Image 1 (cartoon, rainbow, N blue to C red):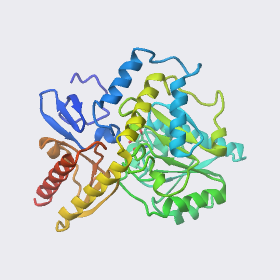
Image 2: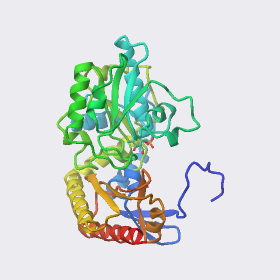
Image 3: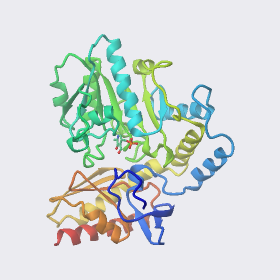
Image 4: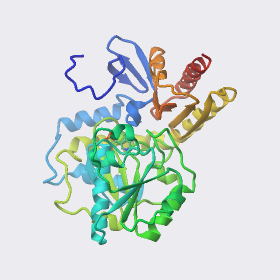
Length: 389
Ligand code: PLP
């Protein structure tokens, strides 16, 4: 490492040279089991042949033109995601933060069109929405906000999973609610089943937009194409990124009904957003998720992992809770456990710790049964060794 990359990440001491499925090989040839999939990005695993072939083919034809012109692949991708989600249209960008930035701008403009002079957005404690100034301001984590004040101040924050706390807000200038269907960075928090339906009803009653950040939990990870589909509601706005391109940068902000009419020509844009290469990648991701039946498989694997961990940790009093939805799994310990990421690495596993004491697993959706058992055995060994100290 040259030291000329800005040190915005405290990187672990490993560099990867190649990957295949759930496995990565470091530059010095050691093999690792990737149980975080690039933080919920490589849902199809590494170097999936369908995506690789689509990318090579598209790179030889057309990588980029401009959003000043028609882009057939963008139209096709919009049609696919709208059909899968039930929303009406899509703005394409390059990341989760940009997708949420688009959603927040949409909410502002929607509010102004309704006559609000300072439209506010309700957001959640421990929510994570990105690192641009607007999305950082929406994020519920003082540590990542520190040093970047003044933040955008038009947010109202309430506890996650508590629809009554949202109902109690009487502020006259609310335009929207922004919430993750399952919180990822916040510690893999699954809200009560009634939570999103209750928010939907409130938003309908009060004329607020219900905006769902599916950047981490979308694209089949929870065992449904999108996290909200476990609940039977439809949001007004939904954001995607991460797994949409399986590692090729692409983000999307979808909207429905009235919300779909807010961002008109000249009101928002992106040079790269939805270019032919990125859209071709995303189309191959969707086709592969469908062809390999990975939406249902994510749900099935998630149940196997949750069962396996719950049984294995039943007698371990240091494990507070095993929770999750599909392949978003959290194992909360009774003490900070960040050092587990290094211990796991030493044993050939990539895992993550979030919210200080929750082990987060976000493995690819293409795991075989043997690989699933290998992951359970590895993590159980790691946690039991750690808590036995
Ligand atoms: N929203 C959620 C729920 C996320 O988990 C993340 C990233 O972890 C983001 C937004 C930001 O995405 P990006 O890093 O692509 O900007």
